[in-house]
Image (tube, rainbow, N blue to C red):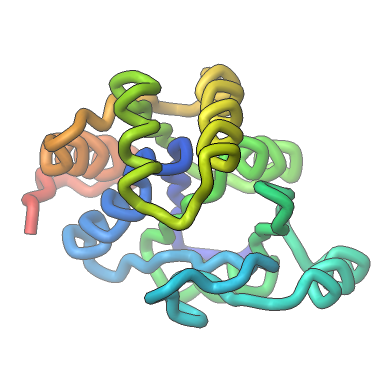
Length: 197
């Protein structure tokens, strides 16, 4: 793959803060962008097409799988999520850093395909705090919340092979962002210490 950019994976369990961290990192690093993934899940209130996700139907997603259009794809809570090859290539040609929030299976699929990346996993302080975060976001019933927590336990165990794992403590987002930014700066060969905002 001809590319000038560096792919950075920021993963966390549902409600673990990956969106907030990526949004902050985009303000810190010039010529960085978010890799927008494709999903078959319906948009949530406030979601923007092409900014949060590319929303397509389940049938369209399955058609793209048959065409081998994805670098990686997974099913999460009965919906497909995936990274389209063409979108990844295009993003890496245009930007120095590309951030993606794919989850653990997605990272492992990139490993299998030999796609270079830096991987950072955001850990919750504990599962009770994670449950409270998921509940605050709303839109899920108790069974769905329980399912997300079970998935979170499995993902946290499977994230042992990430390059870095950092606890994203409740109310300390700036500290988390600073730690992640410093890791990225070191790994991407950026010599100045990144400043928050």
